[in-house]
Length: 223
Length: 220
Image 1 (cartoon, each protein chain N blue to C red):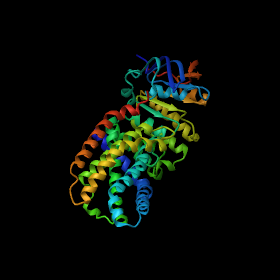
Image 2: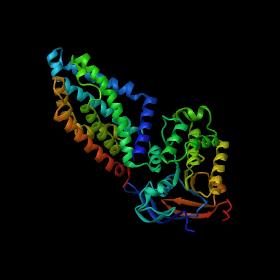
Image 3: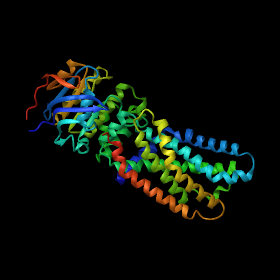
Image 4: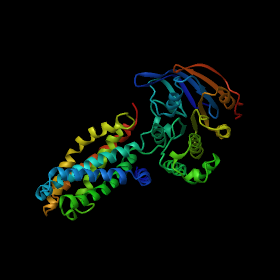
């Protein structure tokens, strides 16, 4: 079976600066891969590249069967991204944000409520404008969005950042459930121990390139 | 495309109802502009009435720049932009939806400014009517241009100052046609060919925006 993510010598630029300088990476379908590295290593740029949001300048790349040079728009609907900054609209509530996204994707709006309950955003937290939520609550809203839309590829940029201990455990559980459900997960982290615990493989990024790779502690998925 | 347009239009209008930026900032700005114009022209009723059509459209133009800046800022945060691009919405539909929401807001502004004409310029604005063909076509053109250029500057650090610089010259033809048509209506006639000119402009700007919006949103 082809990997869900396959990059060879992938180069991406921001302006004239090579944020990715020849990345080689394979992520098997249904597995969890963690990308570690110092600030400025290119972790976020890697996620944006894989999401089809950052153009690839050279190299080859296929994500979920889509060529990163040609099929980026087709790819995007299969991908879910939990980024640094809150997604969607701060003036709308969590429920309204998820409902808007689900309607845009022609998915049942009823999935929003279940997803928000799963991450603990209920009652007033689900109906108050998103800009009033704390950083951790915003993060939970982002996880709820991924739960609701159920993408084939989950891209999580430091998913544990801003979360309290129960929130981090919830995040790990959501990641595990996503992978068990057949989704592929690619996450970045500044917490090597926690990242290794939830991942099948751990990749070290520095200067826009992979410098080391190792196995994670998560058991390989049995087909 | 149309379904996505309605979805985006509803979303933008809901955000406006929630934040009331139009009500508390843009409309007062438009009224203030009219007041300053009236003060600049002096107390002569003749001068005020003669200047009313052009100054109405000038005030509307300036107010539309504010409204356009606000519309563009809704998707300005990087996280929001990334999420929207992952939704797979039809780019043309997004453009039409945002332009439609902006046009609705401009219609509300125009209604208030026409009332201002009556108060400050002693003009019988009832002749203009609300949502006349002339006005609707002009507002559609304003909204289309604003939405398109809003996408051009989205995500830049200088969006607030660059947008007026781009939009105002592009809207000069709308200003001219709107002024001419309004002057004709206030003189007791019809908008004549000026309504047709504005209709052509509106269709052209909407078509260009629908075709180009996706390319503007896509980084190269």
